[in-house]
Image (tube, rainbow, N blue to C red; front, side, top):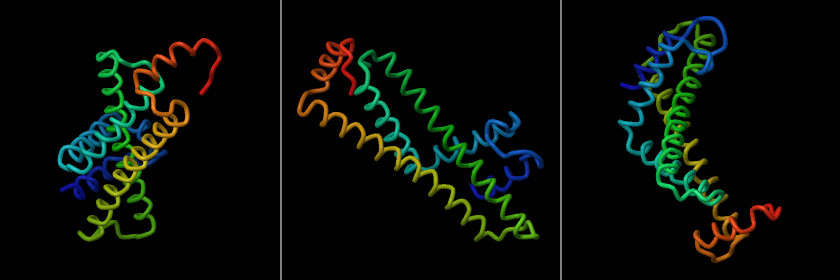
Length: 172
């Protein structure tokens, strides 16, 4: 169960120092990444949100650059997927920090099953909310940029216009 793994991970976090993903020991990072991969694999909503997030980033990249090369697009897509997985790991660390702060408030470190479920639901809500906000922001930015600058031109016509005018000092 995800809640149990989250609380097991809490026990592996070093006692002193800041609790930030990049400062954690490699073995702890590996466990957090494993939980993130498991969350993504087991939750169809999260997989769908990540896929939509990556698609929105790729559409933005294609709008701002002439990214027609399938190899470069695949490379960018892989980079975005890695970043999305990293964001899930960051949210897990943030939830663990929340658990630790609650332990200081509650002298008894034992949590009931309902409390563990509450933390897990909060974690999933935060992760899904992050990707939903990213999808909306990327889509609206692409829509506004596309329509304000180019009106009803096709993507190919936009790229051609951009390539013709990029050295003329036209900023958009």
